[in-house]
Image (cartoon, rainbow, N blue to C red):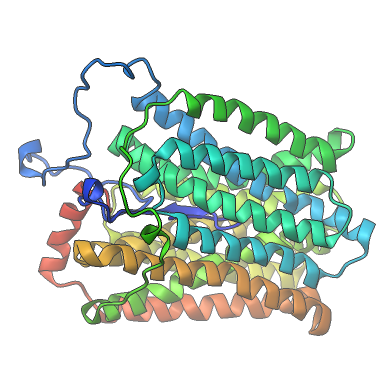
Length: 465
């Protein structure tokens, strides 16, 4: 199951595995492994049946595998999420051509989040049964189809159709990619899972804006260029080593499982407000970020408009890298503090009409976005028993994707039927701050027990942290 931000969520990878050959990896989250304590030997860590081993030379030994394969898979994440973020700067062009309101813009954005969530909940474990490569190649082909729809769009119905197809294919592909990365190289794979989504969302928005600014016919050329990139990556995927064998239960794997064990209710209730808040913030930037920049600067420069999403996603990536060895609680605290501070600065900037302060607040809020999401997941998932993790992670991602899509659509209605863009941004920011404050209260109230803290490194060794 994958989650990303910018164009959709884009920020986490979860592969929920329940098949016999994948029993040791019930849920792998796109957060980083903890460092090994000084003096601890490899033998002291829990056995990991999916760790790298010397491979016997055989008929498939010439295929792409190991670290090179991880880099290819990471590039596919970047390309998929870049294509998901690419329409953001184009919405202004579509709006001027087809004369729709900001409500339509946010609905087009929101249906993508719903489609990704549906794919994650139903298709996230399919590659455990039919293989990584078949799922990836099929998902990439479907994703190319969504780009063809975009390139030939003549109205809002085509945009909605393209976003739904794009969301379904992205969710299906990223679930298989997350699993394949961990199969190839667990340590590098968890790191790539953490940083690639943000890189894709940030680069997609800014490159699309640059294409609009400097290249002809951007509403066609951008998508054709992305199709070419995905075609090259599909060729590399076809040459990649398959890491799992076919297994029964493919149809059963399509059934979503969402559970909340009683013992985990307190930590989940602590994490849920910040998970919802950070993805609601990402939804605001993805749907209305360019419009906010235009209102603050008076400039119609699409590159400047796309910088808001670029700054938010880029600083989230930096935060993930910098805090990769911190404890989950520390990451969560940093995320909440940065989220409250950054959103407060952003709201102040909107009130003052200062673009410089707005971008500064966006950078701080991006730190809160990256570390808040990572900290929330890492705070909860290691506490669950192996058989509980898949359903628990599904629940957390349902909350996150609801945060991504629903408030963004509500903001569109606020812009049109409420107090306008500026007042909507103020109320939106205030709601995000309240949710972050609730998470902070819960985090300070519910301190982890010693056994919970001790469980975190063990979970990290299993790819959870």
